[in-house]
Image 1 (spheres, rainbow, N blue to C red):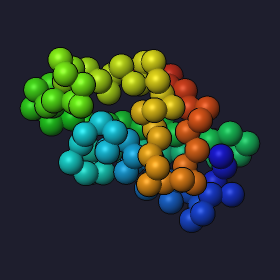
Image 2 (cartoon, rainbow, N blue to C red):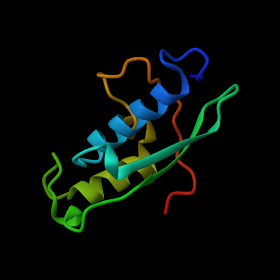
Image 3 (cartoon, helix red, strand yellow):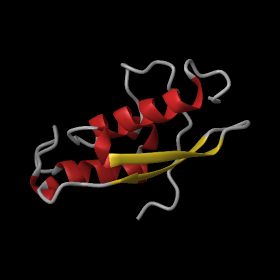
Image 4 (cartoon, one colour):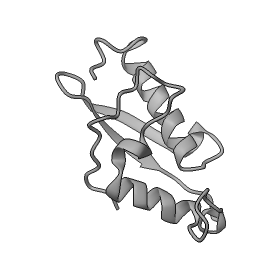
Length: 103
């Protein structure tokens, strides 16, 4: 995926990333996600910061026994492709997504 071939260009890549990350992290809007493009040449890299509400650790996920926080951390550490996939954004191809510097 590159910004030159993405419908809407770099600003749309960032908007779609923010929407996908917010949805998959069970956040109530994209205002919790800040993202910038690091390298828009051959392979796209996004530097992102996500903020979480103080009640986030108590928010349930679709998986019994896991909070939304536990589940999203699991996705980030083990299934980055799933963390950044949404059928609502078919142009956003996260099939080779990786997460680095996750803290």
